[in-house]
Image (cartoon, rainbow, N blue to C red; front, side):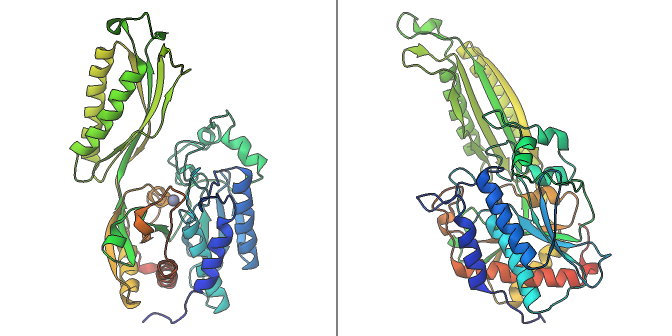
Length: 418
Ligand SMILES: [Zn+2]
């Protein structure tokens, strides 16, 4: 039997709307990139809301924010939930904010019902999940879980040469709490699906079994700038032609490795572009994903081998730098079962699903029992200003989170490592 306490759907919805005003764009989205003034504003609002709930707030060395509600037995490791408040430049209102504010709604509900859990409960707000300003993504949770060096992270530069650590200081979120792994009883991240499956299959809740493996690359192509008129076709070292072949190659690799493969070139830049100059320099990025590590390695091999041919055929020099590697992830089975059980008891429909996107939960999974709850997003659209959700799905997601966290906090012994 679940306790009959319920989250307050209007309060959660209003908080999401209020948060979405910070960095709101004309098209209804949000541009709140990490460590900007707007990011600071969203952090300040979140901290204010946490303090109103009498939570103990700490900030660590990479700017992750933790807000703690004590339990009956504070020697037990905390049951934690959270996500991120930063967005893409053309981001939506719910990617990240949903997970942070659903966790806050859990605390608000426990407080108003005077419900004291056995284990303490914490909200986590992770720094730089999106990675659009300071690549790679998920920096805060990567450092916290010991998978990325703190000083390396602090010296990541944005496109204007500003360092992450200095920006953290500028917005006054360079905390003093050591950013290192510590004991966590369980971590659950609530997130929009960012894909169309739950909506197509008319399911309320996605029970996430794990996340895809990923490899990110940066490609630098060096050809030779030359006059577009007097230089015969046979004499050219055209970096853009080579780049174009790579774009098509990446797309064909994605198609060749179905089901499951995803392959994207998201950035393509021409160095000093001019309409009557043969491009001499190009930069592009590649994002490869697949649910299986082994198949992702095959995609990697095909990319590298074919790029060698492209290099030779176009008489250019191509440098491949892999900047991110995430192994495929399997989430904790006992937490997944609890989420499934709670969903059933609440009479919501559900489906097991693999996350196509990376999430902070994937990093935390390396150091603590972890799982995720997905809710549908309209037309599966995300990382886009039109990203949208239905209020009733937000309510159901938070309701599942509330009862899953109560179950976990009151019976931590049911959590078994995979
Ligand atoms: Zn997100």
